[in-house]
Length: 462
Image (cartoon, rainbow, N blue to C red; front, side, top):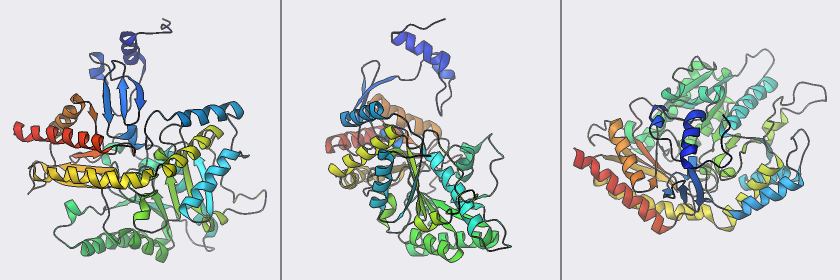
């Protein structure tokens, strides 16, 4: 049957349940109540098809950094579509050139930028680069360096290689066996594993585990270590001072490439343009997506330092070039939007705003630490997490029903917040806040007040 060209809301709900496969949710309840159909977004708010407005406390999927409804981003996309909608990067085009140049200028080093369409793809690209780099720089007779080390609770994507690097058991369930050669070590998670040790002592223990893992595996077999400067979807875990410096030093001693996954951390989210800038430690490769275009267009980037790129230089006809391509990676429209998005971030001082409003919102949320079910409140900039527990002494994670109750209370009060769902079995107990960087103090107060009310119901429920 052919659907109406102008279906009403009832028709849309029926069409939705009949045809659309939604991400990360069980569909059985949709037969009675279809998912919310969003119609419009302005600033920090989205409005559904019923006309109900919600404060978006998670920026869509961590990505709408400059807020919704930016006319100039629509305009630049339209203008570029009219002029040149598509051109593959086997050749070149001006928006791609200018955006690549801008990213390197912001990072402050020489290198090259490879464009893709998603964070998963950016990380897959980095893994392939790491393996080929070592294959082309290894001493004669040495074995392949192919292993990649990541941290438990870290998320690096949903494609098979990126999922193999992701150390969240629920994400991998029923998809294994995955790609061989991916290993995991403990994250720097002081709230659960600090055990009363000083930050310096705990940090040393985390780094020692990484170094021992490399030793046991054989450094000559390890191609790369990948880390999110701040673990995001795994529960907003901020590393101790000295951690990234220590990881960098270990990689330098063992000839391993260091990759930063800044898919969530990047483009002002943490109060700096890039998350790693809080610690002043540079990687060999860095992966971006999400805030690169604030979700207005699908675009990601894998940036490599010049010494890494030079290993791919060779004579025409040789196989030393990077044999990898993304059909829609770095199209003229996407890169034009990315360039204007960065212009907005700089022009409006949004990384600095994220630092200011993040400190304010963190302070409001830390008031919740007096509540018996709030174990920890943490984060940087507008990337914040609230870990809920049954009681503070045991730190037993709050059960699923309690977590769902808090999210529902917030939604009932027209506030959307996040949670680390489908990550670690039994430990999906962290509420996540990452509103658009244009959030006002009034809106931050509304977020905090709504969370105070929602979490207070936990105690009332016993």
